[in-house]
Amino acid sequence: MSPRTDRPGALHRTPARVAGRVHPPAEQSRLRRQASAGRMFVPSALTILAICAGMTAIRFASNDNINAALALLVAAALLDGIDGRVARLMGATTKIGAEIDSLADAINFGVVPAFLVYLTLMEHADIGWLIGLVYTCAIVLRLARFNTLLDDDDAPAYTRDFFVGVPAPAAAIIALLPVGLQQQFGSGWWTSLPVVCTWLLIVAFLAASRVPTASLKAAKVSPRALPVLLILVAIGAALLVTFPYVLMIIGIAGYAVHIPFAWRSRRWVASRPEHWDAPPRERRAERRAMARETPGRRVIPRRRQTMKRSHARLGLHRPAGTGAITPRQDGTSHPDDTEGSSA
Image 1 (cartoon, helix red, strand yellow):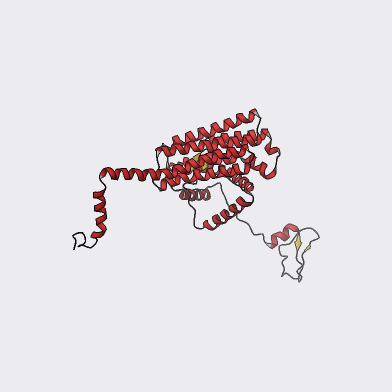
Image 2 (cartoon, one colour; image 1 turned 135 degrees about the vertical axis):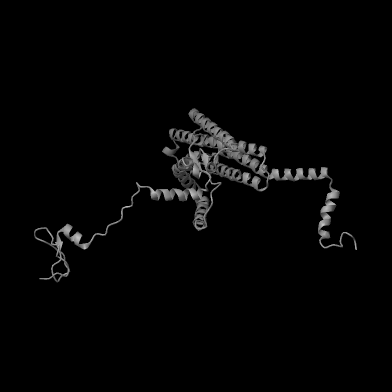
């Protein structure tokens, strides 16, 4: 019997030893570099596809095909949302990938929405072009600040649960609200030049400001909330197919409503360093407990009004032997006037 097969399991160890002899260290290093390049290709390709989708949206918008342009922008947002996760899952996070992703965000969520709004609602208006430039610059500044905050290793743990300002993808969708309203309801005051310019300025301010907004990266779905979430996903899918712009309006309204709550939550945790490293669920439980224990929040129990008090207030009494209620002549009631009293 061969010495390689005279022991149990030797056949399983042979390929590794043979592989070690066939591939010298230099060859193994080259193979590792090739595997690393292959892993880096997938997330970078997704980012490049997002850029292509965004730029193609401008082409469709210039040809008055707004529906296709908005669909491509949504596709670019979806690709932007998964490229980073794919890179982390594959272990292919690199500095160049982060830079490409940031440049793609500047194009897809800064340049493209400004072009779409300008070509659709503000064409041939100089002030509209100026407002579009302001919006694009605000998105670029917001992305630059986001990149600098990523390198802040001294930031508390709770900061990962919030964005500083409205994220670029959300800002792009919010900026396109006048276009969605026009596609759904036609032209109106919501498509007038002053309203559209004011709306873009508001979105630009929210993107470049330090207003906290919730981050879904650290969000966890409770098993109890999973059925409700699945129902909402089904409703959203139905609206996306039948009334996409209605879904857009509902989503923007819901996002706008959450901003005051996110600001209040961040302010609460920022003023309590002992909760900085606590999970979000524990912080919410602590806030509810503190709200219940607040002296100013007094719960007033409901008082059950007795029949006698109601009768006395109305000046009524029950005659003996009857169940009817009649008023006294003098408008008063006697404490002994009960249903069972008799002469």
